[in-house]
Structures are given as structure tokens and as C-alpha cells.
Image (tube, rainbow, N blue to C red):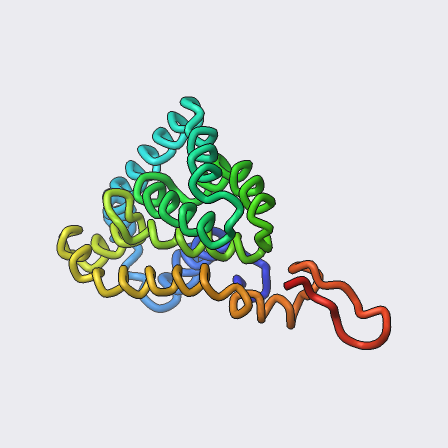
Length: 217
């Protein structure tokens, strides 16, 4: 369903749960039906902590927007980064690594999108390249404390304390930092696939003198 575009990841989870409840359990293990109330209670307890983390992150994001944090951040990045695209993106990476520790990805994007667009224009950065860098950085926040939603859920599923899961994830932190640095320093590699599949998305236009596309550098 996700690959075909029929479901979002959230809807796919709901469809899978409905399929298990309505088809698999009655057909393969009908005796388990009497245990479903206990399963629902366990699920509620399991997800109460992640939902509390999401609520806290949303409140922090609202406070940050109310105090005009994005405007202050934009001034600092513009002052220290100037018009150099790599410096601007590295400063944004530092910003979103910190933000990702406290705010969910979607609120962070909504709150800071105006300054992202502004700095993209100032540094003459390809918007697709900037988007890949920002999203990759925000995904890193899903496994870093104190928010670390994905790591929190995974540790609960396997019954491992969160602090132990965090220490076991340290090699992943190194991999993420290398990946983020790679996306910042090598835009041509990042944009290669979009240029092959959707050239218009990265600013390419048809070659007026023949076949192929002309793409900005």
C-alpha cells in the first residue's frame, strides 16, 4: 500500500491492525479473541510514553514560535554564514540537530520553513538539495535523546532501558553525521537521481537545440 501510494505510513499501520483483528486472529487463532482487551490495555501503556513525548515536543515548538525564535536564528545564520552555501547549510544542520532533540520533524519544518526558504535564496542553494539536507538532519533527531521517538518506541518493544538503547545506538550517530556531511558537501551526488527521474524538479529545462536537458550548476 505504501509503495503504490494507496496508504501513508500511518494509514498502512491502521490497515495492518484492522487486517489482523478482522481476518488473521479469527481465522488462525480464534481462541486469542478473549485476550484482546488485555492487548488493547498493553498497547495503550506502551504508547503512552511516546505520545507524552510528542505532546511535550509540540508545546516546545509552540513556545519557540511564540518567542520569535526563527527570526533570531535567521539573523545569526545570515551574519555568520553570509552567502556561502556550505556554511549556511552547516549552520542549519547544527540548528536542526539541536531542534530534532526536542521537536518533532513536522512542527520544526512548519516553524522554520520561512527562514529555510530565505537562506536557500541567499546562498543560491538548490531547494531539493536543501530539502534533502534538512530532512536527513531531522530524521537523526528520532534516535537522539531526550525526544528520540523511534528509539523510545523500539526500546519499549524489545524491553531494553532507553539509556542502554541510546548507548548501543552510538555507531548509528556516527553514520548519520557522515551521511549528513556527505549530503552537504556533495550536492551533485544528491541531485543525480532527481536529475534522472524528474529533471524539472531541480531546475532543469529541455535543451532547445536537441534531446536532453540543461541543468543549473
